[in-house]
Length: 244
View 1 (spheres, rainbow, N blue to C red):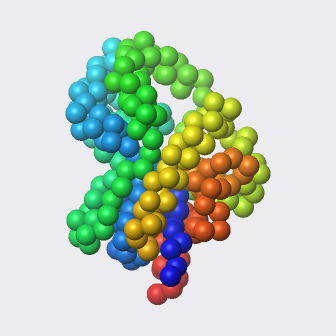
View 2 (tube, one colour):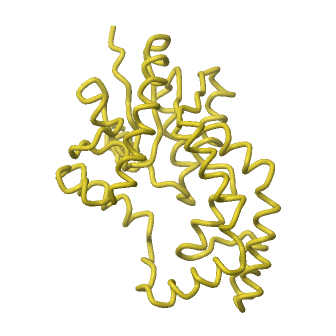
């Protein structure tokens, strides 16, 4: 019996991500969905998301960016790093789409990321990240940086395709500390995936596209190798359209 899993690479905080992922889940009908997410991250967003959003807004106003603060209050998508920060306070679209599929189908849903690493990220999120001093520093860095891409999601998917086609360049995408963190987290995830695959025949694991690349790093893509199919979300959807 075929127990190969699908490793699905996504771009986090894609405004169309929830609809895209839910559409794919309804089509491929996995019996179990694993997510690159841990319970501390989910709990922090639920418990502190609105409070931290208000804190970010106050810091932006104090730094003279009433325009960004107002857009944040209105729920508008913010540009560049501000969109990333605001998105970090919301429940990820991957979770919302997977919960909808699990509720509809009875599929299992598992949060597979390392909770220790997630707790460390939460500590920074609820700590100094949205303080006025840090927001001012980010604004100064933004002023020195090139203008953000007009379509950052498409740009990220294009970058992912490039690395999937030439994986040896991937190790240079990260610094040494980031590489070590990526490998440690994916080693933890691999154990959870093994457990899911022991119970279910059709397993889909959803993670940031970086985790799919086998470029000399021990990512989940490298650890599973030929036992898993690796595909990007937008490409999987296009394959479905072509097959109709």
